[in-house]
Amino acid sequence: MEILVAKLLGLLGLFGLMLAGVLVPVRLLQADSGALRYRRALSLCNSFGGGVFLATCFNALLPAVREKVADVFQLLKISSDYPLAETMMMLGFFLTVFVEQSVQL
Image (cartoon, rainbow, N blue to C red):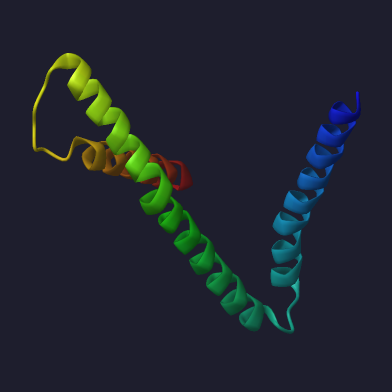
């Protein structure tokens, strides 16, 4: 029972932090006095967040995908020097960008 309470409290805490993280920038950008300064700060924060996701991709996800592709190749007795893991990841990235851009139009 204690684990369930801890999980629920963690879930509520994470929800509150995420909600604050979304609403604070919106509130700051609505203020007329320092909107330009806040836009620059938010732009820098977005760039930092993008770098974190890119580093996570290269340091954690790409090696895992390479390992799984190698396991499948070994299981199917296929030998190839083509970088299939990287191609699949880039196709997924471009598909995500395409869907995001088409929805924003």
